[in-house]
Length: 179
Ligand SMILES: [Mg+2]
Ligand SMILES: [Zn+2]
Image: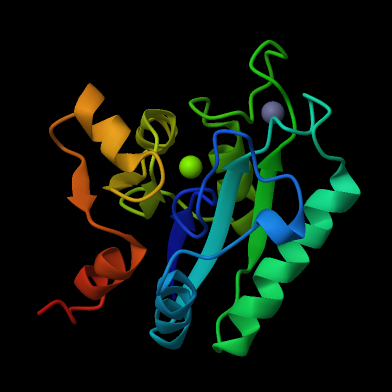
């Protein structure tokens, strides 16, 4: 059984600088849900680690986040995919928590929950802090150009970071189905 860690906004769904605050605002990136389903069928466990500071900022509450995630899971199920768990950080930048990326607290939490070593586990994100958290946790950071990805790329990313157009391309590569 393999594992993959995904950021949510900008990787699975379209991101917004105004935050995703309602189920209606959560819209999947083309082929991302199908890509997750392909991972599942290839034996991958899929976990999401996401910063949701909109909660600390008072833009949405936990109940709304739960409803957003229900929509994501429902739409994913319709194409035959499944996310095993979602670890979210509800804190803001000034809260000094351990779970907000670029900190790797959520990655450590996942590792101990699953009793798994994250070495070389692919971790896909669109922001520098996703890559930093992955790297600190010993996982393999992968950048996608969707979401804030192009912006991140323009600001410069470490040389050892793999770069792909989108999640579907990452999955093509992982599963050896790239053209
Ligand atoms: Mg993101
Ligand atoms: Zn946190």
